[in-house]
Length: 215
Image (cartoon, rainbow, N blue to C red; front, side, top):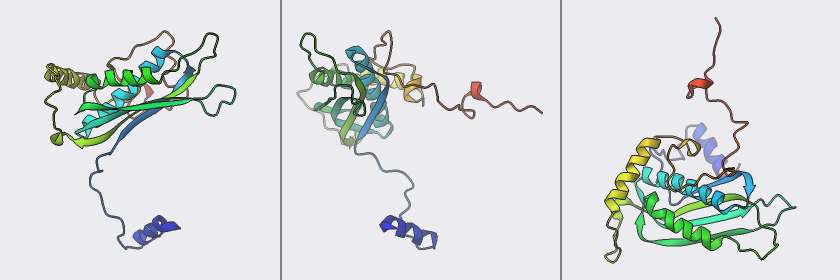
């Protein structure tokens, strides 16, 4: 039964083995990685996906009152499609000062994406990308942030107020229901959105999906 199974058996027989956590511990890193609805080789579409993933990770970072020191951006093709060219590319960079602000993170994410984006020779078949990944790591509590005296950011308070306004507008929505996504460019086809044709209905949270009962 392994150690976990043995502990579970003891717990069910009245012997405490697993400590009770009243609140989950803060995450040491926050990652958002989502497959695209359709594979794409368009830079702007992948860029929009990276910004959406970054927005989601940064929102989770603020929810636990943490700041990130590093950001990682990765893109990959579909490893299960043997008829397509395969690649996996990723880089990370350290922020000058820790941050939890999406506005401040976007330029670094775009720098990483441009650095890992493939270049092609004339006539070369492009890669079709299936997934983008954004990871915020080396997290610290908000009260432990030390600012760099050489880092000049005159609009930091304005950025924070704007970030708070965006979070308030979006509310507790999921990634695909965000009303405002900072820096995400909508392309004509928008292939990186998740496919939702087979999505289950939400009768307890969405009025249009309510269940009507005839009496």
